[in-house]
Every structure is written in structure tokens, then in C-alpha cells.
Image (tube, rainbow over the protein chains, first blue to last red):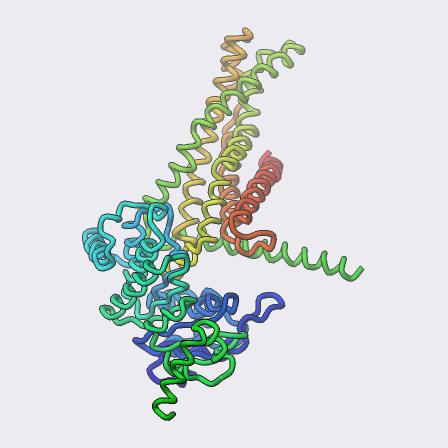
Length: 265
Length: 261
């Protein structure tokens, strides 16, 4: 059972193989309520697979995915459906319905999952369009949007059912640095306003360090460390140290070490 | 020897697995028809896509099949001095066999391939995952309206095919080749029984289910195919879907005919 206080999600000893390849080899990860946890790691380490476990789209070979104490792998039918309404997901490619307009994409969860009258749906969708600076694009189709706008529409759609937990799968892949920064600002602003817990899978280091409350490094099928960005940079574990050095460069770690040296640590 | 046996075993397991998955796919799609919220607009949209947009191709196919039947039938029957029976020959072959089978084959080529590609692309671009994450049943939302629309549309298209075919046979047989008009209509009326019409509709309803089932299933599970992912995987799945449903239509045509004749 969950051992972590103030955690809304806890992954306990998750193992998963695809064919002969074991991708996850006993993943333990607590996700703290209301905060942002970023899962980092090199490509092919199973970060997206981990997200799919949380959503119940993939079942672990062993271990538990506890969401508010409920094991997702054991949930079926209505219980799984109810659990999923707590989640909002922004997929890597935004996963917008390409035969629907932006408005219809955003309105879809409200039309399908609630009994809200059409006028109220319209108001709510327009309020989200304003929040994410998408006014004027409501009649466009996804193919007519830029990468950054697609992500915003994806986020707008994910926010319609007021999720408690938002999952972002590689939210800035394929975007230029300016657009990436816009996307991060958008996350930050919406999280400040709506107060959801967010889990982000990202390659975008060191930029993502500014946004994260906790960083989890997935390497060789296990979470090597899960700590605040500062602690992560100070971590002495060789795997973590090597990763930080590789992605942030020698200078960055040296700077921290220099600061620590100056403070007499 | 062992690897050969392993290969056969793996192949057999895959077939059983695929059949089981297809069975569950059909079950959940049918359940989805009866699940709220009930919406008419997706069904009407699919009736337009499957039925209305197929009208032209069915009209021309029906007309030329009827015309060629009139042409061939007239010359064959004339050898036995039985050209008066042209009406019954054309109408029975159309209503019992050619109407439902050729309509279903045309719809498979036109609509079945489109269904497979559409569902397959939705799968590989994570749109189906997105539906599941929004707790929207993908079967009810995507597949069930296609089943209902297909079961409505195909019998109607078959009826149009038969009607236009009989008219085509009449045009060629009576007006171009000079068969007797009264004999054409009278033999048609006396030869075609209500059981023939029932058989025709039973076949077209069965084919309607087969087309959507096979084509949507191949698209829905495209990501599980070991022999290709992405655009290539979808194109391969679409080809398989059209081939499998065309063969299934011919097999089931034989089965239904043997049961109902």
C-alpha cells in the first residue's frame, strides 16, 4: 500500500517486459499532490510506458500503480472510467482529432462525458480559448495549426473536465526554443490557476529544471533518484552525476561545487 | 525441425489470438450501440459516408452488370429459343447473388478501406489513446455508429443495385436486342419469390456487418502488427482488410445460399 504522505500517485516495484526486453525493472516513484514531477532519462528508457501505466493503458507484469490508494491495474469498467476522469493528458503529438475543428476538439470531453447544455459548453470552451490565447483559431483544423498551437489545443482539451492530475508526454518535442518556453509558461500559468498535480516526461533539460518541484531519473529500467532539482545536481550517485554532467555540461556542476566549496560544505 | 514446429505453433497461436481479439472487438462494438449517450448525428454522418457517397458507383456498377447480363443472357437463351425467360434470368441472378455480392465488394473497396485507414491512423497518432484517457469508450464513439450505418445502408444500396441492374437488362434485352417486353416483365414477376428478396437482404445485412467488423478491427489493432508500424503499417493493414473482407463476403455468400436455398 501507499507509504508516501501527500502523494496522489505511487508506483511500487513496477516491472514490464515487451517480448524478451524488460523495459521497467522495478520502478518505485512517489508523485506528490499539487506539485510538478518531471521524469527524465534517455530515449528508449520507458518514460512514456511509465505514463501509460499510470493511465491504465498498459498493465504491469508485476507491481502496483496506486492512484489515491487504488491499484489501477485491478480497476475495470466504470471504476477505471471514473479514475480516468481525474486525469488530463497532453500527448507527445497532441493527439488532436484531425477531422474536427479546434472548437469541437476542445468541446468533445464536455459533450461526451457531461450533460452540460450546448450554450454552457460554448462558454466554457471560449473561456479556455481565452486562457490559452487561442481565440480566433476555433474554426481551424489541427492540420492548419503550428506545433505550439497544437500543444495548446491539446492542453485546452485536457483541462475541460477539470483534472486533478495532468500528464505531459514530451510536451516540447519538435518545438523551437521560443515555442518551448511559451509552452512551459503556459503550464506554469495554468497550474498556478488550477492547482493540478503535474507529471511531465521530458528531454528538455536544463530548461525543465526551472519548472520542476521534483525530478526523477529513469535509467536502466529503475528510478535512480527522485529529488528536488537542487538535490539532484548535488547527488553523488555515479549514474545521476554522470547524467547531470552529460546533459547540463561540466560548467554547471562545477559551479554548484564551487558554491558549495565557498559555503564550506 | 524444432524451429519449423515452433513456427507453426507461433502462427497458430497468433491466429487464435487475433480471432479472440476480433470476437471481443465485435462484442464491445455491439455493446457500444446500446450505451448512452445516444446520439443520432454520428450515425447519420456515417450513413452519408457509407451509403450516400457510394450511390454513384453502385448505380453505374448495377447498370452495367444488368446490361451485360441482358446481353449474355439474351444470346444464350436464344440458342434454346427461350429468350422470353430473360427477365427471370436477369432478375434472379441479380437479386439472389450478384446484387448483394457485388454491392458488398464495391462498398468494401470504397468504404471498408477508408474505415480501416481512418481507424488505423487514429490509432497510430494516439487519438484512440486520447479517447480512452478522456474516459470516452472508443468502440461506442468510433465503431458502433459505423456498424449501425452500414447495416442500414448496404441493403438500400443492394436494392438500388438490383433495380438499376434489372432496368439495364431490360434496356439491352428489350430495346436493343428485341426481346419481348411483356415476357421480360411477366417472367420476372413469376420467377422472383419473396424468399429471394429475403435472401438478398439477409446477405447484405451479413456483409454489412462483415465489412465493418473486419476493416475496423484491422485498423483498430494496427499497432499490434509485428510486420509494420506507422504509415506503412496502416497501408498494409488496409490491403489485408480489403482482401480478407472480400474473401469473407464470397465465403459467407456460399454459406448463406446453402442455408437458405
